[in-house]
Length: 167
Length: 259
Image 1 (cartoon, one colour):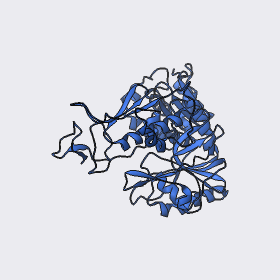
Image 2 (image 1 turned 90 degrees about the vertical axis):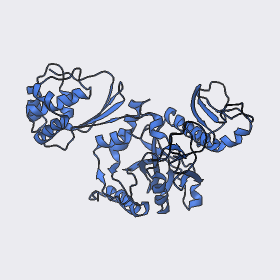
Image 3 (image 1 turned 60 degrees about the vertical axis):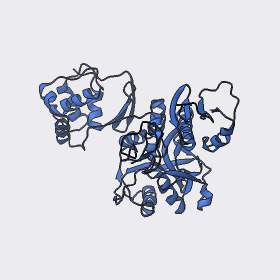
Image 4 (image 1 turned 90 degrees about the horizontal axis):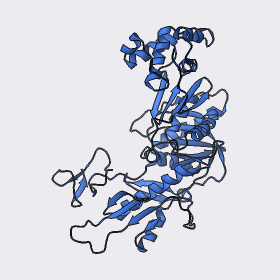
């Protein structure tokens, strides 16, 4: 029986969705109501069949056991369960197939879970200007405006502070 | 901030973070150091400016301006990350009818251009770089000079008054969040996000998200609870401004819909 991970997470419940921040991986996930309901019921003692029944009767979601397995597999891959679930059919499914099957059965918009990697402060806020094509650059200047790179007049990558420009 | 030569002080001052003031050096938590090249470089020695974050070298460049821009950026990000009573979003912000319109976006997403166009349309200027939120989710003014790019490269600083606008002075609740980025010939098709999706998307632009995730999420939850959050690429700023402002108008109307 699956058990939801409890440590190393910041969890916020917004209406029927749940947003989870994984402190160990600096990843954040938004669980749709269906995924959130499955996750909430992973207490280590409730079977998958029982979870599916609860979603149908209590949450009024049209789900089958396959849907729950798909959600559990996804939750496991995202490290939101204590252990990855094991079910032959689910394991051989591609993530796309899992999500498609879960979405078709549940009738909710895909994807079940939206995730992102949270950037560092520098990654979020960097605002140093890139160097335009034709402008001087040096090997430690990694920010020629895309798609240009810092090169010498003969096309080689710069390794000194000579006549290097973004090309 | 430390510099190797007194002559660098005047160069550094324009790059200090908005709202800075001088304090006693005792108990300082963070040091940035700018080292100028020797006037007479030794044989084989590169003539470069070197920038350090504490003891770690973060940049070498022969161009002073590049070093200063990097220094300014690093200081700004440090303040944004470490401010304890505020959550800084990388976002433009304007005020419209006593509410804030927040425009999260990475560098080169076109935040300043969109902010400038909104100000031209009568919005109040709050910031072109950071939405500064308190714990309750209200936006505080951060009306630094707008950094308008010249030829897509360097920035020129312009006070909003010189552009015909006015700076906001009051706290403002967030009424609208627009997640957008300029793309040539993009069609404006705003998609309204659920609260969970909105929180996730805005979290992606929160400077201190990794350092204080619980506080940041709590603050953003308050923001998305009341604000309309939409997402769409956009074309030219002038054509999109009326549609952004109409979103605010429609959202305030119980019978309004996103269009």
